[in-house]
Image 1 (cartoon, rainbow, N blue to C red):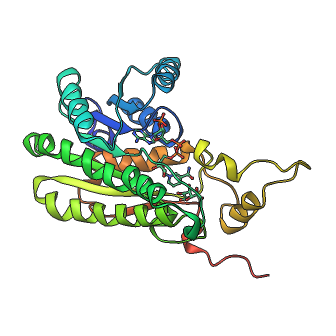
Image 2 (cartoon, rainbow, N blue to C red):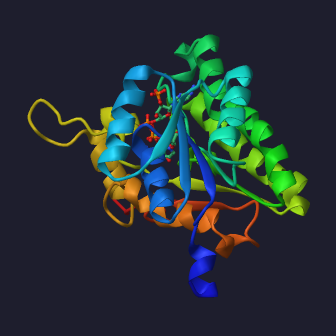
Image 3 (tube, protein in one colour):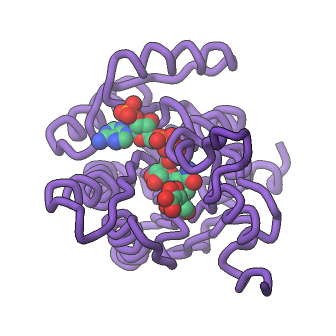
Length: 267
Ligand code: NAP
Ligand code: GCO
């Protein structure tokens, strides 16, 4: 392989993608496998694990699955130790696992708010903390945090999610600041509105067969005039995991069909 192609290859690298049983994480793991990486992923239930392993196999990908809740530090430490034993020290970590709760702020319980922040912000801290020492010893590492439009924008009903994803953008910059000298690059990907189970309720057809009002709203707010797909994130995710991005650090790459550039159509 020539040096240019090698820069974009993930041949022989070990990648952990959290919450990659389906959705965006699954597509990123598939892209990494196609680029030559060995894949580890986790999810919380045996049911999702069985389905995911069958889905990876159907794509010809030999992925190693671990049942692990990313908010539980002991479970995360064990998973990282197991991956190191079974696949090798992790070169690439994608903090993808995440949830959203769409509840008006004054009606949201503190427990719900805390759960969103725990999974979407505290867990990337926990998993990164477990992986970084191996990266330092290995002399390099890539951490990619899956941020959001809500790392930049707010909207009614997503206060906890926006607080967590805004925090994740700053955790990204801080990991870059603290570990850049160890040849660790930490960047974010900020997906726009992507068609996955997480956004399915926003795309449900109405009783009369028409589009959900939020679905039409997103299409009108997106210069590309469509929802994104998990596949739209494959190229950016491979770039940020490859040697081609070795001097890109602390950046959030928005993959949003242009939403953040656009003020919206005039009435
Ligand atoms: P999704 O379809 O709901 O998938 C989320 C994944 O996270 C699932 O595999 C889920 O697995 C896992 N997960 C959740 N909590 C977990 C925990 N505590 N421990 C381990 N795994 C956990 O969501 P998605 O749309 O693919 O989103 C993936 C990431 O992108 C999330 O961080 C999301 O916030 C972000 N994002 C999504 C969009 C979008 O438009 N879809 C846009 C911007 C950012 P189990 O439930 O099986 O454990
Ligand atoms: C919402 C959405 C979003 C997206 C995504 C946008 O309710 O507004 O679910 O927050 O999932 O994170 O980038």
